[in-house]
Each structure stands twice: as C-alpha cells, then as structure tokens.
Length: 140
Image (cartoon, rainbow, N blue to C red; front, side):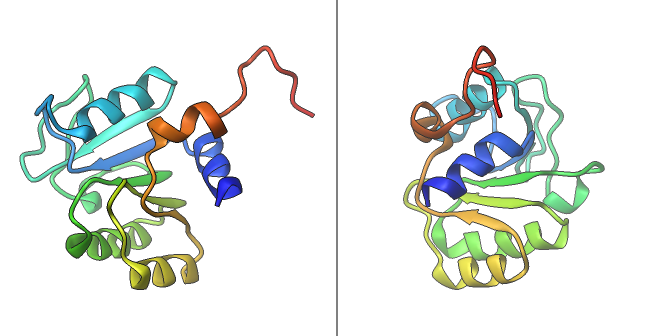
C-alpha cells in the first residue's frame, strides 16, 4: 500500500475533492487546503458547487471540464462506491477514499478498470511519510 500511496501523492496534480464545501469544520476543507499548499490543484465537488479555496466548484465529477488525476472521496462508505464508478467514467488515474471510507467491492471494480486506489487513508497524514521528496533532493 505504501508504494500506491507514494505514487498517487507524487503523480497526481489535479485532485477532485468530493464533499468539499466552505464548511471549515469539515475534514475535506483542511485536507484540500493542505493539498493546495503542497502544489496540487484542488477541484471542489459538492451539490452546492461552491467556490472553495479560490477554486470553482462543480456539482458532479462529470461536470468538470478538464482532466482529473485523483478523486478524493469524503462521503460515507455507502455512497463512495458510486463516486468510484464515476471516477472511472471520467478517466481519472486514481481514487482516494478518506479515513473511515471503505468499500471493498468498489476497490475491486476500480482497480480492475485500471485506476490506482487507496482506502481508509488521508493524504495529509501520509504526506510526511510518503509524499514527494523536497525539490532539493535529486531524483535518479
């Protein structure tokens, strides 16, 4: 799993954050700000389609008019499988289910479709351990 997490954090630049609104008490708000502060483009996906952290929001993944690398899912496990299927439908590269979000059937479907997937983890927590190396480190 560590290698999968490392790959997503390094390779995915545009993150659609499903469940992101302007509610500052929600985890999605802080995680999106964290990703943005580390050079990632965030795209709010929420029925209200609000602009969050200066980025235009969309009501659904299908409405986003540009490619998305990773779909970061902040919804209940019961709803997450449908979001994973939508991520496949928009040709995302990866799906990330946040802490507490688990759907083994969705994992099976999503990875069978060729997407990389992580469940029950948070990118903001994993960043310090597995995130991209600082720019001062030379990559081979």
